[in-house]
Length: 102
Image 1 (cartoon, one colour):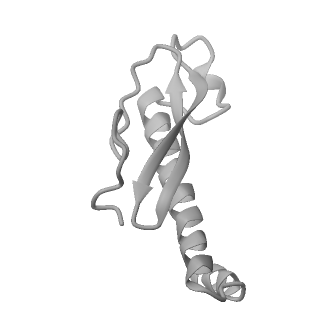
Image 2 (tube, one colour):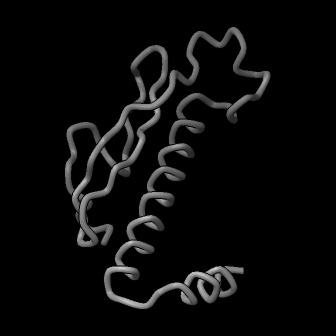
């Protein structure tokens, strides 16, 4: 499946800038998916799951964050919880560079 997606994306890549744009979007989606999985683990239930009702803590939107990577500036959205207890691991609070991820 990943090969099919890659082949489809490669059709539109004509320049190095196009490649950097695709890579930037891929990194953004991957980081945001990982942050979502961390939030799910933190809360103990999936998004929109009924188990979360009345749990005392729940998702509370997103905060914008700009990271610097080898592909340029990367604007991501980091999830928040109502009790402000969520401490992300892949992109920690205050982190501005994607080191070791590139």
